[in-house]
Amino acid sequence: MKCLDKNQKLKLIPIIKKYWYRTLDIIYPAFCAACSKSLDSLRECGICKNCLKTIKTNISPLCLRCGMPLNSALNHRRDCPECRKSSYYFNRALCVCRYDGLVRLAIHLVKYKRKAKLGISLAQRMADFLQNHIALKEIDIITAVPLHKHKMRERGFNQAMIFVEYLADRFGIGYSRNNLRRSRKTLSQFSLPAEKRFKNVAGAFRCENPAEFKGKSVLLVDDIFTTGATLNECAKTLKQAGAYKVIAVSMAR
Ligand SMILES: [Zn+2]
Ligand SMILES: [Zn+2]
Image 1 (cartoon, helix red, strand yellow):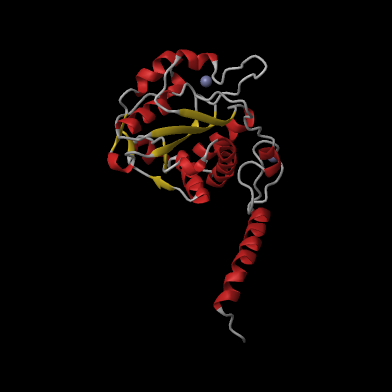
Image 2 (image 1 turned 90 degrees about the horizontal axis):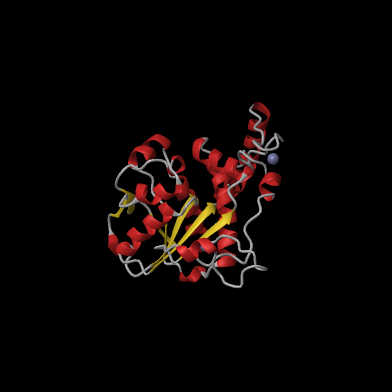
């Protein structure tokens, strides 16, 4: 029998992978959590491609500070009424889409059902969005809002790092892991009224190695923007470490 050379073996890998997933789909069929259609597990995870396509990303004009879509007919300024009353440590925040229905479900599946491949599909949307809204060549380093070590142990991974790793790989930008840290446990922001959220996270982060961020433009990534308190506190910590600029991006708000 003729032996296959290395190139022929490499060409076989995707074919074997495809048939392996096809077999798995027959034995253990998976269904879209949104429309119940059966999933092609080679390409889909948790939610089918058709449902994901219905997620609408925010379109310009966006508030130049917090990223909220602006009503251009009513607003000739480039910020929203809320931002005129607030000051943030991040230079700008961007949100890919509204936190409703399908996006809420998708983020839940990534975070609590370990659907990492679905996280990558969301990260692709985030990358497309960033490409259209910021000058990526100005970003020196990407990092994530960290989880506290207890939560990290419980969940096993930081969902925001799925976005960070995808963005870093796609845009060829370096990323930082484990430098920005959560130094104390905080209450879940969801459980608190808006006015208490800034206090809850005050002083909750630290930089292990400030030199990594010194003089740099940092892209700070999280999954959800609620009041912006967590992103703001992380941006403050990065600025104290010497970051020149912090642009925050979250998947949904
Ligand atoms: Zn579906
Ligand atoms: Zn705003």
